[in-house]
Length: 234
Image 1 (cartoon, one colour):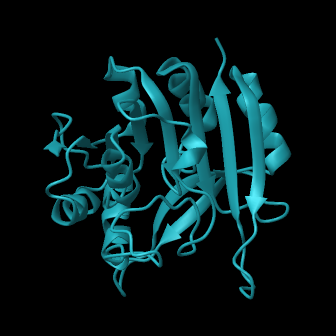
Image 2 (cartoon, helix red, strand yellow):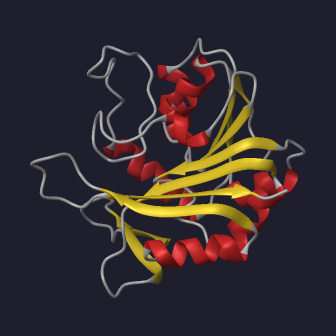
């Protein structure tokens, strides 16, 4: 694993907010229900939903995880023989990744802002993805064009997030708890219905676009997971 800092410490309020969030998240389980030490999970539920096949990757190809957190999905792709690059604003999340996956070959971690990273990198990726990450918390008018520019023709972009609350669309506020004497940290997220996500991706040049809600596991009366996928046309 290469731990490659982006050359400047990110000190804005978003970085601090995601550091606060990192403290509330436990490490991924040692193994999943099938006994696997790495796995890919798009949803907020354990052992549920599709896996890495959504990205249509082959060994030796390169994937970028936008908001990689503690690195579980990127580590799984690296274990399958891909070059997995992860970027996250939170140093504490990346510290968890370094602690959990110290010996994973083929995984790089970068600390910083995804838009800045995508604007600076010369790498053209075979797939770019976000699992409850920067795809949800970045303005699509800024993010989708620069992702498109950094995908090879035929490359996949996919992201998952919670479905929108009915009537609450566009830029919304998410609140991350802090100390008992502090107001919650506020970060922006972008919520749209599946049909509108399809139109938005098509507007920015993606083809074969799909967006649908994955139902929660049977017996769970909670929200499902919105999965959006598009391909960079030739």
